[in-house]
Every structure is written in C-alpha cells, then in structure tokens.
Length: 239
Image (cartoon, rainbow, N blue to C red):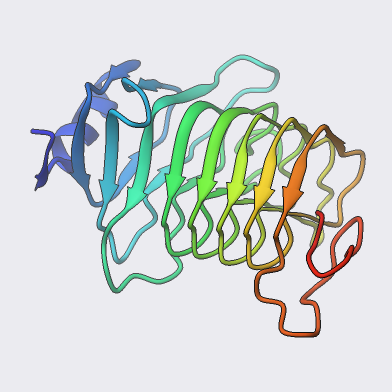
C-alpha cells in the first residue's frame, strides 16, 4: 500500500520472486524482512521518495544470497531508494547482508542495529560478492560499521559514498583467514564515526584515492580505540 503503516512485506516479496526487474514507486513501505536469491533489478524514485522502513527484530533487513557466475555478468542491482530501520528491541541486525554480486547506486542505508552493508563469502567463486560497484551510497547512523567487508569478498569498488555517524567504523575491511584484496575506494567521505573513518584490518592490493575524512574516533576518551591504516593523526582519526 505504501502508506507507511500497513505491512507490505508479502506484496513486495511476491513481486521480487516473480520478476526480473521491479520498480517501487515513491511512497513509504513498512516491511519486516526481504530475501533475494537471484539477479534482479530493483529501482525506486530516489532515496527521498521511495523509502523502505524495516521493523524486524529477528532477521536482517535484506538478505541477498544464492549462487552467482564468474565474471562481470549475472549481477543484481538496487538503486534510487532508502532503507531505514524503524523498529525497536532488535540487536545485531544488518541492513543488507549479501553473498552474491550486487551493484548499488543512490541508496541510503540508515539506522540498522549492526552494519549497514555486510559482504559475506559463503562459497568462493560461486556464492561471493566480487566485482560489485557501490556508487553514491550513504551508510549512516548504523549500530555497527557503515560497511563491513569480510574474508574472500574481493575486487569491489566504492565511489562517491558517504560513511558517517556509525557506531563502529565508517568502512571496515577485515581479514581473518581467507585473503581479501582489490578493494577500491574513490571520492568518498567518512565522518563522525565512533571509531575509524576507514579501517583496513588486513587485506592486500587495495586502492584509496581522493577520500575525505574528519571528526572520526568520536568514542575517544583519552586513549584511542583500535588502530587503523594509516594511524592516528591528532585528536581524531584522519582515516
């Protein structure tokens, strides 16, 4: 219905399951959780116009999963809308958790109780987000990092994105046991995050060009929190 009150989960989930391309008109849609297991193009009228409000307390906002092919083909797309958590009582809920190739353009991911976006590798080469492009995406006010990149999620690009006012890092690339490499970040901004604006916690061959960061490390009370790369400068982290 798009009235901001009625639960539209079933209607939108059925449309996703039935379509290869989905247009969501300007309105505010109340949802619990969406599961996407295929390549589909989902577009709205702009992040100020098409707003998906999530209320889930038991699941992430959107789970985008399933097998994907090698190369640059077979990719999902999300653009021209805002995703916002408006529920209460939930902890550790990610805005979009994806384990397949998805491109995003002009999307806001706002106020989720864990990371705004989390990239997860379930099976290398067959169920992993790689060669993804995130363009003009705003990761703001989330309870974890704005964007979290885990092991094996390689060769992804963020351009002109904003990572601000998140409770952990603005952008966090984390290496644990499987190589993560080839991340590219250009022309972005990270500010007012509780920890680092940009935190490369391992990984190799990443490129950072023309990014701007200020007033991160908001949780500092005399002793800086965990380090970053490059390290601290002054009273807040430049990266």
